[in-house]
Image (cartoon, rainbow, N blue to C red; front, side, top):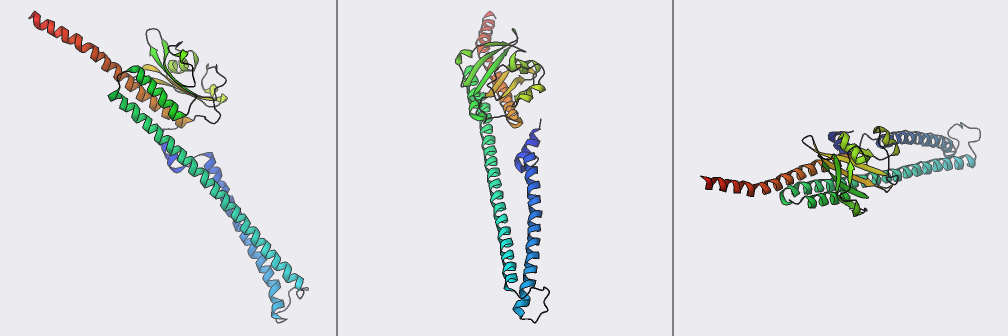
Length: 300
């Protein structure tokens, strides 16, 4: 997996990918091909001029060819020069159009990455903002899944909380194209993709059937999924829950960059959940402690 620094460097320079290397080799070959065409045009032009100048000088230059006095030689030579030059210009124009097309594609890809990067930063800032304004856990769960839907353009996003007493994961929020009947559905740790990620406490990225080989024992139960990401929510080495994102569209396939972003979501979500739990616990304890203090004061 790439580090954040590697991904940022790739994002800024656009280098390091096989596509970029292939484009570089293609441009290098095109440069040499253009030089060869230019040399050919110069050679043909030289031959044409050598054939055309003696007739124009009117026998003042010795004839290098036995058929130099014929008009046909001059016409053929000039025609070859024109054809070669037109061919060269046509090739250059086609190359310019191809380069323009490549640059347009690169610009669109860069714009798309910038928009994705901005949307993810905005979503992360919203999660951090929830720490100071939201104290209802269910509202936090729903906002996190909603932001996952908006950010990753996924078919379904769900958040599951871990119950240490029963060693189960419980679906607390679900968004996207899904049936709300799966809310409060319980799943044993170790079962399914979410249970697998929770048990091993490692993120899972599935974007190709071959990816299952990286996770021994993991089985696909929903063949309609084209791509999925599952990230355990861990706070201070303690499992809090699991964040799931899945896609059923062939146009939406997740990669390492998406997984890294979802890990940031999970980390911020875990901190927000723990903070809210502590705030609610303190709110429950304050009246109790105040009553105990008042009782102690009366006892004195």
